[in-house]
Image 1: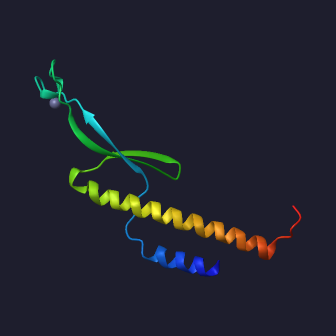
Image 2: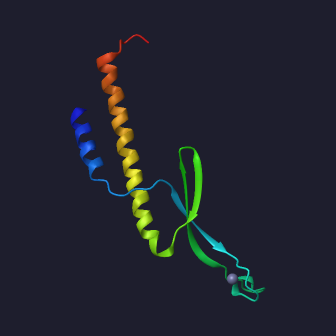
Length: 107
Ligand SMILES: [Zn+2]
C-alpha cells in the first residue's frame, strides 16, 4: 500500500492547472428586434454558450466561459477530476493502513 501511495504522490505532482466544476451548454434569446432568435416560424437561438458551474467552500458559482477558452477549461476540469480521484484513493489507503496499525480489532 505504501508503494501505491508513492505512485499517487508522483502523479499528483504532475497535475497541472485545475478547476472544479462542470460545463453545460445554453442557447439564448436576445433583445434585438427582428432577430433570428425570435423568428415566428423557425427561431434560431444564439449559442451554444458554455456555462461553468462549480461549488467551492460551499459557495455555488456559475459563469459563462469565453468561447476561445472552453477547451482550456475542459482540460482543467479533467485535471481536477484526476486530482480528486487520486486524493480519494490516498485517503482510502491511509485509512486501511491506520486500521492495521493503530486500532484494536474490537469495534
Ligand atoms: Zn437574437
